[in-house]
Length: 102
Image (cartoon, rainbow, N blue to C red; front, side, top):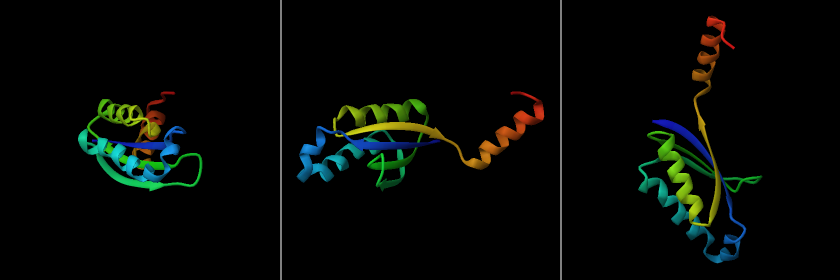
């Protein structure tokens, strides 16, 4: 399974739902289970994004479907990034350097 990070902000129109906003966010997150996506961690943040999810999905298509479905609900707007562990990235760079590829 591949790992992804999803950074989310509350859609400005959804902020009007303030009394029910927490419930609406929780409902949006049900998409992960529906799409067989493993939610590893979910954080609230104080910055550019309101929430940050770290999750695993079978592939990019599954991850992007989940993101598109979350966005379509109109509560959260998201950006999704595929990630790999730093150690794996370091090995990729070493392999590239060893073969002389740019």
